[in-house]
Length: 387
Image 1: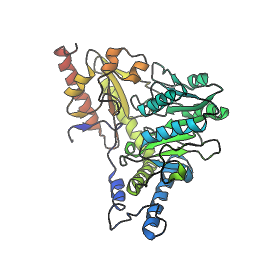
Image 2: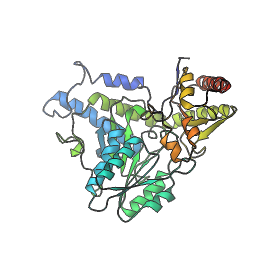
Image 3: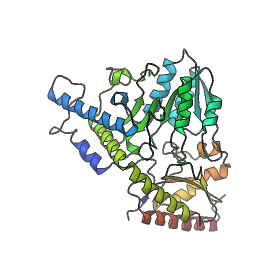
Image 4: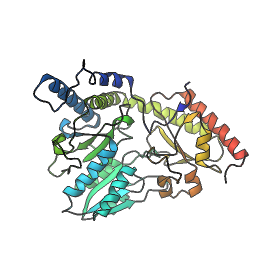
């Protein structure tokens, strides 16, 4: 077993060896290194062919048409492009947007910026189990609502949102639905047609692909128009200018194809690891699960600990690579805004840690993690480190 044991797959996954090998063929002089926008010679044609093949692979993962995939630098850019892009093309219809208090910062900060531009944002309150219900979304919709933006799987809790029910309501009212599927595309069934999604964000490094590349699904419809946020050469049908990083795009495509083939198998394995971890952790005193036990995707577990400070516990668990929550906010000592939005007392929110599992996680690693967690909790509580 390699130490520290990596249990932070929700922050990033390692690049699959098959993905890395495929990428290498598009980097060096003896490979297909051309610019996909160079359509006057063979080097460019080969690069363009690779880009379009990857586009088809990503589209296939989510049940989309190849022409509906737009390349970005990752889910953060995809979220910004979707939210701001729709806001400015629909502002004449209305300026009301619905999201929730437990979204990723890429969504919350984009919405906060739109508020400064005269848009009105409704931030939905999650249930005590960390769920955003279709009823709460429906109740927030108004005649001037132009967009709903919600996660499919919450990155801190692992809780699952009923996107299909929300999509049905939004489509009925001609309200655009944006879904952040960074945590779900490789582990949950996602079909943009069946779920009636208009825009969907993906990130390669959450599905065993490279960092720095992602995609935005944009439904091909006269009703769904996205204003560009980056201007330049008019790449990606004018929605996102910039020279395409062929090797990264190829990596995302390969990762998407592998995810499609392995998704069912991966999900079963993650569910077994999840259950093993929770059953063993339940034997430790003063440990509580954050988020719904039933309505969740396997592989992300968020726990709070009585009479222990989360930062102290994290520092003591040097044998485990885990986090206090989202990797984008883990540098702060403030309690998780996701947990406080759920109504968690500050001391419990401050004590929370996130454990997340992946393809390479073994039962031995799960058992080791629980053993180390139990020992460390006993030691910290015995020395009365709390307070």
